[in-house]
Image (tube, rainbow, N blue to C red):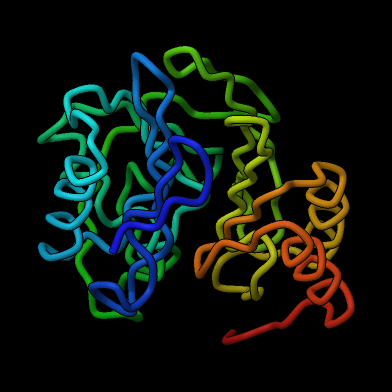
Length: 229
C-alpha cells in the first residue's frame, strides 16, 4: 500500500510493509524530476517494492534524479546501491555519515547488528552545514540535525501549501557506537521545532497536523534515550 501524505508525496516503504528493517522512504515529485528520501534496508523484496511503487503512483522511475539519506544507518541506506546501479541516481548525505555510506562500515551503519550486508556506494554530494537543492521545479532545504548520528540531516520542502519535514531518526535514540551526542540532539530538536512542519516524517511513520507538533513535544518531554554501548 502506497500512502499519499501530501500532493505529489508518497510513502513507498515503511517498517513492516515488507520488512521490519525498512525505514520510511518517501517519493517526492518535483515536476520534471523526482526525489527519494531514504532507501530502506536493501533486501531484494524492499528494493523491488521501491521500484514498483514509483510506477504504481504513476511516476516514471527514469525521472528519479536524487536520493537524499537522512543518516547512514542500514535501514535508511540499504537500497542505495540498487538505486544507483539501476536508475543512476545521485546520492546526497551529510558528512561524516556520507563517508560511512562510501565505506560500507558494518558497525557504525548498524548492518552487522541486523545481519545485513552493506556494500560501499559513492556519494555525489557530501553536504556540509545547511544547504538547498533544486529537484526539478522543487526547492529542497537540507538541514543539519546531528545528535542521533554526527551527520543526521533533515529534509524540508513545501508541496501544495503543505510543509513536509523528513527527519529520519533525528528525534530517535542515542548510542556511543554511532557517535551520538546528547547536546547536539537537544539542539536539533530546537531546530526541528523552528520548521513548524505540517507533516513530520520519521524513520518509522509520518505525523500530520497537530499530531506532528505533539510528537515533537512528547519526544522533548521524554528526553534522549541511550541504547547499547
